[in-house]
Image (tube, rainbow, N blue to C red; front, side, top):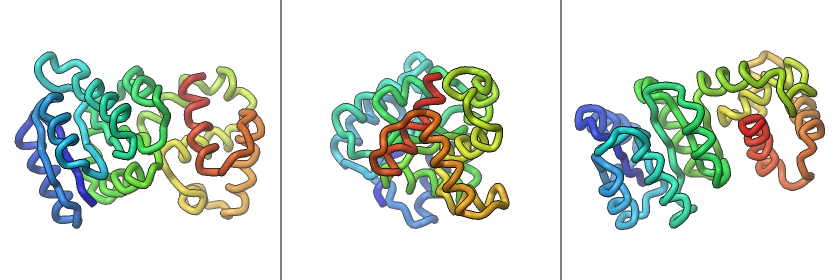
Length: 214
């Protein structure tokens, strides 16, 4: 799998590249700012771009703006954003164009190699991944808001794990319940959020967007 990494800290960028190379990924480009990132992505057409949200020159949201350009021009490329802190406004801005092929992790997760590499694989496959801390923060704030108030505490828990990109099997293992029980919760979530009866993967994305936009 081919990856481009954008991070202005050379130390962090090289560290992430080394982790990915050791895990079997091919790092085809590295960038230190948004303009360089766009050049590398357009030239190499990677499977995934791993992007720091804050990059030169202002260190505000250059990475996010570059990510939105990539999603507009090259929607087949997965985008995994990295952030030092939980920044909810950046999550919602990133997902305005849809959640498929998008991920958002705190930078600390890079050291958790399995979580980091799994997130890259999931966004490359068109899935969506949100950091557990981001999910917890958002669910905590919105637990009493529409449309989530119709969900039971267990259904909100399942929805949070769905937002992290977990499959039904992974959710069942996390919650120590049967996979059939998870399927029932997911079906109930879809019904309560009034999501259309399209394919299940698409509805999972819509369910995540529903609580992000609540």
